[in-house]
Length: 242
Ligand code: URA
Image (tube, rainbow, N blue to C red; front, side, top):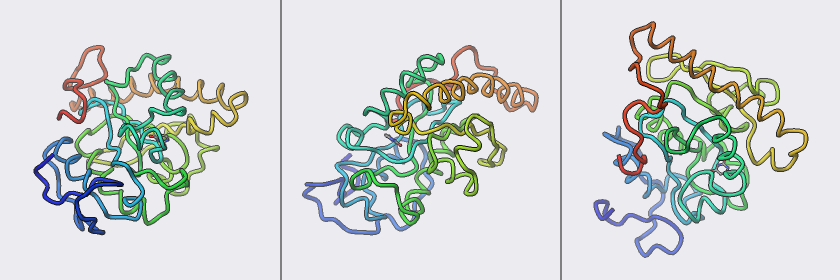
């Protein structure tokens, strides 16, 4: 990562901290290139408290993209989304529904840990938005899955997660309409497991049929790849290697 001079990555870095960088986010040729720029981001105040930027992981051309809120303490330490307590529940749900972390793409609305895990502020979401949009453009998924309120309202500002959870919505990205499945946030389930876990399991189970429907729509429109049983379209390398 020596290709970005004076890149300040996080707490304790010897490089100079210059706020507001980069002012504009260029279109990246690959996720790897995008994440190299992202690692140096100081566009909002979350940069000052992070250990490192937590970029997305998974298949660079996954058919399903999961979007959470923001990294927590464990994610900040390890540099990977959903690896703490909420992540363990999320991984279990993924597995129970026949998905592996390597074949989907997992990211967050904001890529830096908010202090004390507070909710990201509107200006922080705005500062991170071009990074998320670039991940969306490059991965180009067939189905989006939002985890919790912040991710849902990023796409559908008036939606209420308690009202629409488990009910497919639609958003426009990359010149097409993409189905979006709103789910509860795994951390919310941990706080009220007895009541919310059965709901989450039912809602999560809607993903497979939604993906199959999205595939047949794409095939009918001539845009599908006709890929086999794997849900990753073109390889399932780790996004960081792309
Ligand atoms: N919660 C999130 O929203 N994202 C993570 O990566 C971890 C916990």
